[in-house]
Length: 85
Image (cartoon, helix red, strand yellow):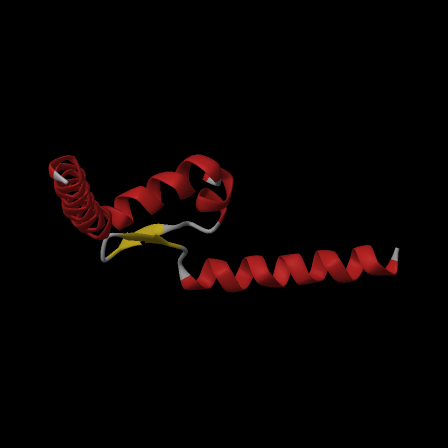
């Protein structure tokens, strides 16, 4: 009976530790989300970031509006030309 109680106690301690760790991890992710996302976008899509003249707004990397519309028009035009050929 004593060993069962020790195992239960150990399991509860492990669960408690994991919950605390997950709470801290969630806090770290939430407070650093812009940095994580900006880094991923910049490293994987550097050409697109430059093409869309992306800038940081409120900590987040976002494309500027005029360049989005210009690029969308160019993509649509290219798709229409390609579809006709």
